Amino acid sequence: MKKTISTDQAPGAIGPYSQAVEAGDFIYTSGQLGLNPQTGEFGADVQEQTRLSLSNVKAILEAAGTSMDKVVKTTVFLKDMNDFVPVNEVYSTFFEQPYPARSAVEVARLPKDALVEIEVIALK
Image 1 (cartoon, rainbow, N blue to C red):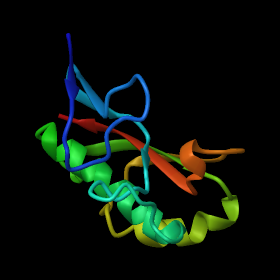
Image 2 (image 1 turned 90 degrees about the vertical axis):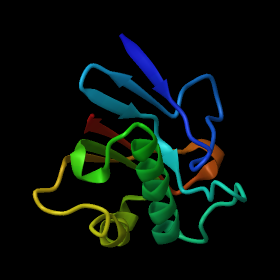
Image 3 (image 1 turned 180 degrees about the vertical axis):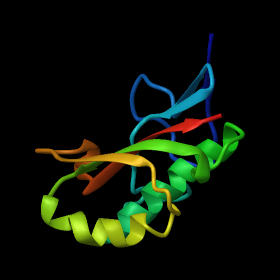
């Protein structure tokens, strides 16, 4: 059985998908852009977009009754792999060791021309 997760503490979906889905013992978030949920504005640079993206992930996980320390896997989509180091600087402030498994992929384009998008899988 699956259950959708939604919160106004993160930006709403911009297409036909849920912010997150609970299935069994796991929470699967949709990719989160670096948008301020109150204003809908992007962060000014890749570090601010990363902070907002992960803050949005955190809000969704909390709405699902879990937390960032239960994240087991992340996927980071980057517009430019040259942003890998500055993204990591912010990313490391949201997670403690042992860090979740992670993939980082450079993509041609992200929705709304974002610089970064992050999705996670977490334990309930």
